[in-house]
Length: 592
Image (tube, rainbow, N blue to C red; front, side, top):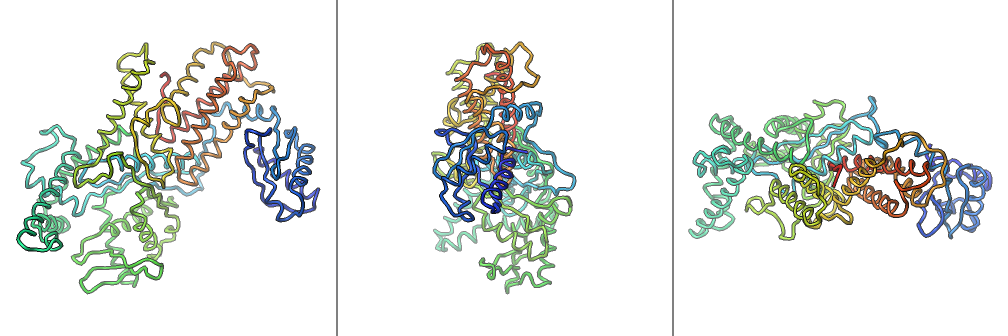
C-alpha cells in the first residue's frame, strides 16, 4: 500500500474520530520546497463537510496522524495546507522493495483485459515520409509503448493509403515523363523517386491551367478541364475497374515506395504489428455504405453520390461515396475500422494518431460507426496533434518544399557530430563507436524535443536547439545516464544487498520521492495518451539526480552503508531513465 493510500485511510478514520463525519476524497500534493515536509494534504475541500477554521482543522488532523500513523513523524500547518514529514525508514523500506525490480513501474497485461490498437504513420504511397510524419510516428509508437507499460496488450498498426487520385497523379507523371527510370537505375530510394513525379504532376498541371486561362477559360473551369487531371481521373476509374496495365504499374510503383518506407522506419526506430491497405478496406467500406443506404442511415443525392446527414448531431452532411461510385477517405476508414475488429476480436478500443487538421473527419467517422450499430465505436479516440514547423515556414508536398524524413535524420547525426567534436569528450572512442554515438545522440535529441511537448501543441522544431547537453533535452538526459554508468563501473565493491534504515540526506530523500512516482507517471501518461508526461518526469528525475550528485559524495563516501545505498540509488535512477526514455523510443549510451 502506498503512503497516500495509508494516509487516505487514516484521514478518513481521523475525521470520523474527531468530527464524526465521513470524508470521501483526500487531495495530496508534494510539499513545496520552501516548507518542511514530504506530502501535503489540502484542507480547504474538507470545509464542505466541516465548518471551522482551516488551520485548526489541519492542526487537529496532523496531531491525529502523528499519533496513529507510524511513518508520520512530524507536521506543520501553513494556512489550509497540512505538511507531513515522513520517516526515513519508510523511504528506505520502499527502496529495498523496489530496488530488485528491473522494470519497476511496468505492469503486465491481464488475460481478461481488452487490447488497444494504435494507428500511426499511415502514409500515402505517392511521396516519402517528411517531418510531419516523424511527429506522427514518434507519437504513435511512444503512446503504444506507454499503454503497453501501463498493463494493456497493444497492437501497433497503420493504414497505407495506396489508392486514390493522388496515387494516380504520381503514376501518370512517371508514365509520361519517367522514361522507364527505376530506383535501381537512378540510385534513389523508391519513395523519393515516386515523390518526384508527384511534384512533376503538379508542375505540369499548373502549366495546363495557365494555358487554358490564356485561352479564355475561367480558373475554376481550367482546374477541372486540365487534360492531365482528366487523364489521372480516368486512370483511377480504370484502376477500380481492374485494368491490367494500370494495376501492374500501381503494384510496381507502390513496391518501390514500400521498400523506401521500410528503410526510414528502421532508421527512425519504429515498427508495426499489422498493416492494412486502403486498396483492400475501401471495398468493405463500400459494402457497409450500401447496407447503410438500405437501412436509411445514408441517402443518395440526385447525382448518385451517397451522403450521411449529421445535422441533428450539430455537424453537416458528409459524402461517403462519389457520384461515379468511387470511394472517398471516409469509405475506406469505415471499412478499415470494421476489418480491424473482425481480425482482432480482443480489441476494445482504437487510437488514431492523426494531425489536428483531421479533427472533423474523425468526429464524423466515429458518429457514422455508431449509427451503423457498432458498440465498440464508443471506444474510439482521435489522438489529435499539432503540426511541426521549421523556422523556414509551412511545408507543401505538391510543391516539393517538405523536409524529407531521411534528410532530417542525417542532419541530426551531423549536428550531433559537430557539437560532440566541439565539446571534445570522446577520447578513446574508435571511429565506428563515435559514429554510432552520433546517431544515438542525434536521434535521441529529435525524439525528445518532439515528444516533450504536449501532443495538442504546435511545434517549432530547431535541430541545433534540440542537441544541447544542458537543459530539457535528450542529450542532457543521455549524458546523465552515461555518468551513472561510469559510477557503476568504478564501484568495485558489493552493493546488491538491502540496506538497513539510514538517516537520509535531504537530496537522497528528494530523489527517492521522484523515483517512487514512476509507476503513477506511467499510468497518467497512458490515460492522457501523452508521452510528454514521461519526458518531463524523466527531466525532473535527471535534475534531481544531478543535484544529488553535486551535493553528496557517492564513491568517496566514508560510511560504507551510505556509500552502498548511494550507488544502489544511482543504479536504480539509471534503470528508470533507460526504461522511461525507452518508452519514448530513445536509446541511452553507456559512455559519452
